[in-house]
Image 1 (cartoon, one colour):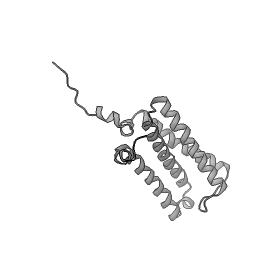
Image 2 (cartoon, one colour):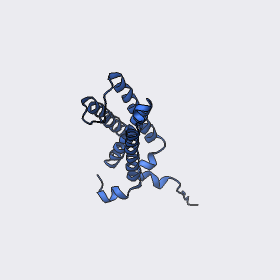
Image 3 (cartoon, helix red, strand yellow):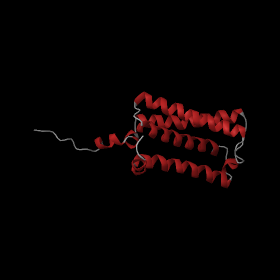
Image 4 (cartoon, rainbow, N blue to C red):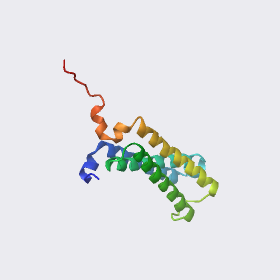
Length: 149
């Protein structure tokens, strides 16, 4: 694991932490304004956003400890799913006063939204945002390749 100073100055960590902060603000705004009750789909969007934020943070940790390829995908899938199941368990137990367990059907749909968020991060890891998550790849992007003649 890198020193805290490197983590705080690293663009990839700042992106992951900023997205996690956005997910928290999304939940808080929805809770404060009653969007969860008013719109049935808001909870699905919130689960998608939060699960993708957790998966992004888990991916960042995995990359920092040296995981790549299938190991990284498994790491993100396992810990993302564990976080999603853990959250549903917290809702079931009613550990927070603003959380409500609406039944097993709701929990299953929430887990599907979580799986979509985790799956999106895994898909992007393998294609588009790998350079953002892996600073070692940044050097190769846009670099001019010099050839000796």
